[in-house]
Image (cartoon, rainbow, N blue to C red; front, side):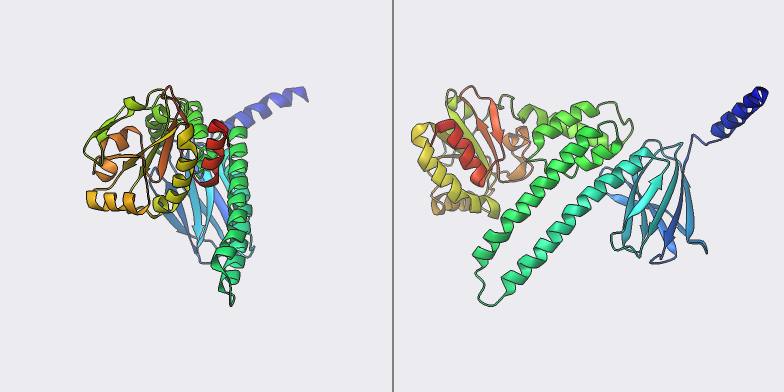
Length: 369
C-alpha cells in the first residue's frame, strides 16, 4: 500500500501544477438573477470600469477568466447589485449569491482576500442599515406638523455621528488585524482622511512593498508621503503671505506662541458656520495665549474683507488670492476647507482639522478652563 502513495503524490502535484499562474478564474452562480447578463468590473486608482461580460447559463452559472498584472479589486455585477472580490493571477475563485436575499449576502472561496473584503462589506453594511433607518426616522420627524427643525436635528445628528465613529473604529480594527491583506487597503480608503490622517500615514508606511503594481496603492502611498511632513508631530512649514491690510504675515513671528492656522474662504459655507465657534474660543483663550492666523483661499479680496467684518474675525488674516493654487495652501497639502493646524510654541503641529466641540475640548486642555 505504501508504494501507491508515491504515484498518488505525483498525481496531486501534477494537478496543482496545471493551475494557470498567468490568469485568474471566477466561476459563479447567481440564483434569482435580475437579468441574464453578468459583468466583471475592475477598480483602478480613480474609478471602476467594465472589463468583461457574459450571459448566465440555464443553471444561472458564469465563468470569467482574466489576466491581471497585480492583485486588484474586482466586482461582479448583475442588475443593480455589485459584489466585491480581490483576485490575482493563479486564483481559482468560486462565487455564489441569491438576489432574492434582501441582505444580498454572497460566498466566495479560492481567494482569502476576497473572503476578507466580504467580511469588511458585512461590517460596513451593518452601519449603512443603521444610518438608513436613522435617516428615515429623521425625515419623518422633520416632516411632522409643527416640528422644530433645530430640535429634530439636535436629536438625530449625535446618533448619526456616533454610528460613524463606531464604524470608523470597526474599520481601524479590521485594518490592524488584516495588514497583509489587500482588503485592509480598500477598507482604509473608506476612512475620513482629515480625521484619521495620523493612522493613515502610519498605515502607508507599513504598506510599502506589499502590493507591487497596484496603482491605487501606489497613488495612496505617494499622497501620504506628501501629507506626512504636515501631519501631527512634524514642524509646520514656514511661510510669509500678504496680509489683508497689506502687511506681510509671517509664521516666524509666532515662534514661542500657540497659534492656530485656519484655512477658510468667504464662499465656504462650513467655514462660515464654524466661525462663531472659533470667535467664541478666541475670545476665551486669546488672553491665555491663543493666537489665530486666518489664511483665506478667496480670490476676491472684497468678498474676503466683507466676510471678516461680517463674522467679527478679529485675529490676523492673510491670503494669496489664489484659491487652492496658492503656495502656502500647497505646502500644507490643504485639499478641503475648513482646515486647521494647531502649533505649539516650538512650531510643531500638535493637532489638525478639529472643529466644534472637539476644538473647544482641545483648547481647554491646553489653556485650562
